[in-house]
Amino acid sequence: MTVELANTCETQDQDALIAQSPLSIRGLTVSYGEKPAVFSVDMTVKPGQMTAIIGPNGAGKSTMLKAALGIVPPVSGRVQVFGRALDEQRARIAYVPQRASVDWDFPTRVIDVVLMGLYRELGLLGRIKASHRAKAMDCLDRVGMGDFAERQIGQLSGGQQQRVFLARALAQGADLYLLDEPFAGVDAATEKAIISVLKSLREAGKTVVVVHHDLATVTEYFDNVFLINTRRVAEGTVAEAFTEATLQAAYGGRLATTQVDQLARA
Ligand code: ADP
Ligand code: MG
Picture 1 (spheres, rainbow, N blue to C red):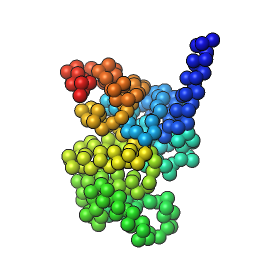
Picture 2: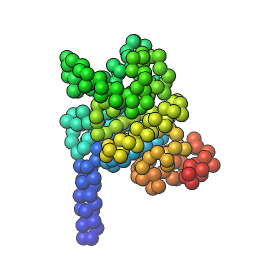
Picture 3: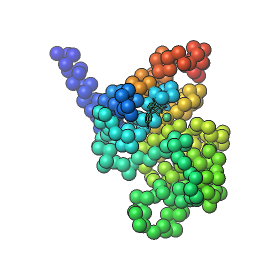
Picture 4: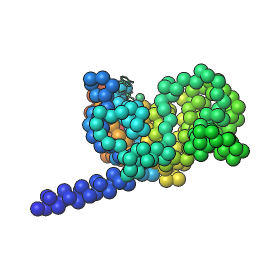
């Protein structure tokens, strides 16, 4: 009897958590071929916090974000955004893809990339007004790229491009921000600029989910971690879920024990 009661409470708590969660994923399996890239994964992102998705190369991190955005179709599973179907909530999600996946060979000015973030306000044939430009410039200023508005995006360094994509996400005015390895291969100035913008989003009550590769900065940057290696390995606060045991489980033999020791103590 007691057990049954406890279970009921737990289910209700869980339901409430899912309903409030900016991003809730249940039983997600995604497959590009025969072998699943993500298998039967549950994730409940906490509102107003910063969460890192961590795992080895090929663990399914990018695939999870893409499935959360409906870019890749799941074999099974359910995605809810702020307690509702993804389709109803798309405008509330901003996405900064992994940089290598964007090819900027064609000529586009930086300001135009940021204006793309305003497409919902602009509509398909909307005229760009001074107020739109001002908003886009403000977003560029927030990432320290205001002086580069008229440059071609292809002429910028990788780090500068990354900041412009973040500015585009800011322009969208979303409530949930999904970023895929925003710090990969960027200069120190860019890393600082990006983390400070992400922290200011959190202060404004927004939710930030970042695929993150640098284990050394996890404790400093994030509130929560989600460890994945095709299956979910661990999920929770950094103190709970970013431990030697969970890292070993996620990376297997691919991390030296001393490295894990250092990280767990950081
Ligand atoms: P991560 O971001 O953790 O490095 P991914 O989500 O990119 O991992 O990839 C997970 C697995 O799915 C890998 O084995 C990868 O090779 C495979 N994969 C990813 N994208 C595709 C694709 N478009 N077609 C086929 N296989 C893919
Ligand atoms: Mg990836």
